[in-house]
Amino acid sequence: MPIQTRRGEDSQTLIISIVGRFDFSTHQAFRDAYEHGDESIRYYIVDLSDTTYLDSSALGMLLLLRDYAGGDGASISIENCNNDVRRILSISNFEQLFAIR
Figure 1 (cartoon, rainbow, N blue to C red):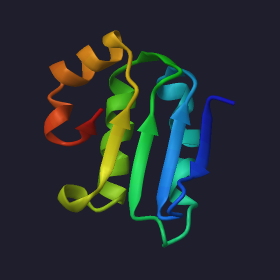
Figure 2 (cartoon, rainbow, N blue to C red):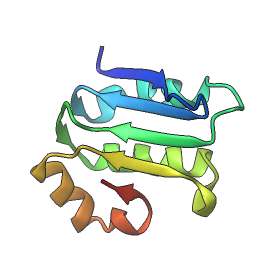
Figure 3 (cartoon, one colour):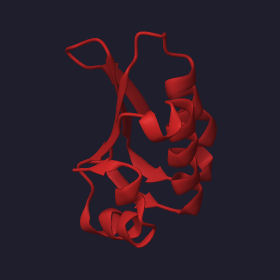
Figure 4 (spheres, rainbow, N blue to C red):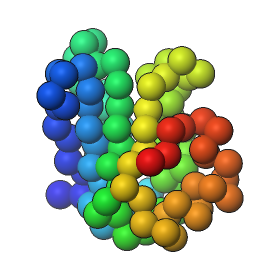
């Protein structure tokens, strides 16, 4: 399964892990991962440690998550990016919108 979710130890954090390609084919699974959570979620972590590819539709999906989580007040971090994924996020100026670790 390309999208996996789990709760953080504080039970207010939702960790979304993307395995393999993060592209339009994962759109619905990615939305389902955060839209069907409960209201106790305050923080989001997008774990890209097993992500091999990211395209412009994935960037759009990250923006949709940001809007869902509260826009400018959202607490979202993108973590464990490989060099290629980090470069795409940097070129797209996503470090201004998300905490990238």
